[in-house]
Image 1 (cartoon, protein in one colour):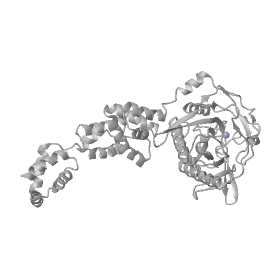
Image 2 (cartoon, rainbow, N blue to C red; image 1 turned 90 degrees about the horizontal axis):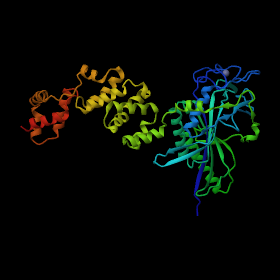
Image 3 (spheres, rainbow, N blue to C red; image 1 turned 120 degrees about the horizontal axis):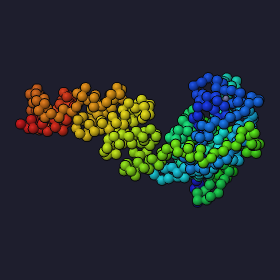
Image 4 (cartoon, rainbow, N blue to C red; image 1 turned 120 degrees about the vertical axis):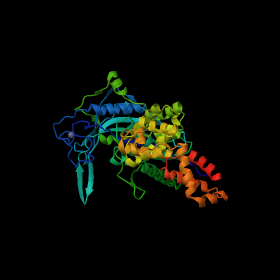
Length: 479
Ligand SMILES: [Zn+2]
């Protein structure tokens, strides 16, 4: 009998908070476009005699994240020194939290693409400072301290995920949440959201925890899925061959799709944690907590569920409309301006507006097509003022000019030609000008009707009411 295995995966994420300044000094936090070692000071480079001062904004963003992850914000927490020696850590220790972190517990319930739900528990959530960066440059080792002291939240999940797809889906939903509540840009390419995965396997149906390996620094959703998949397959092959699984630390090489063994992992005792003597304990009273949490918006998965329940949208639509908070807000504003079928507004956004957003690489708040303008365009299609083709072209015109759609329609004469008399005159002329096609039609080549309709549309620059043109043509051609 072959044993079926399941994966047991826990994820350790480091989330860079998007504060203006660093966590313990007033240096600029975002150094993405800046030369190395330009946003540094005596505090974040660990010179003797300096004192750290805690950044209130970092604490508040961590509070928002904790609440969004259903974690319990602690009334008192404190900072510890995590001691280790590494070139990118000038102080020789990292200020982190250990025994009393800012939040405890927490979980996220998220949907899988097949509609089933998964629940991931949060083991640990704490606030800490980032380290610098080192890089190899033709045999030299270079250090950039710009990232030293950038605020991070470290969040570790329980071993609750059971496939590479579940792990990837969790990170996808976490990224969506971080951007939605505005605590992090969560750009994985820029290292705003970094992920390590702990992976082990066990026979399906058992609840034992076997030795695990740790995959370091997988920094895209694709890399998470592929590296975990590769490691699970490797562990299954090892176990089936009778080899034990050793607690390796692995590094994913995205280009070759290979996991490489790294240094053996330090145990926690090696860090000699002790309380940071230069910082007071962090006290969060009810009033401050309530003030901060009152700014927490409706969360993406809640809004997704509400769109289905309140507007009768398919889950597919609700999911797309809630990918970004600004898009979901745009949808509701357009719907309230339109005062009609919610699905119709959703269709226009998903089929047409998203194309414009993608082409211009902008978000919904940057659109010149305001929600009111979109509602106006859909209304003009509904009441027969313009046809669909004109409406789609009109979207682009509004976006490039910022003008009101109704004004563009009257200025450019885009209104649909549904004046029967005008169409009849045009069609009578067409019949006179094309005796050959008329004769062929009357001999039985009725497919030519489409050609005639095409001619009418061409002469009216696509503005003719096609339905009306067709019925007038049928009448004339039958004679
Ligand atoms: Zn600094």
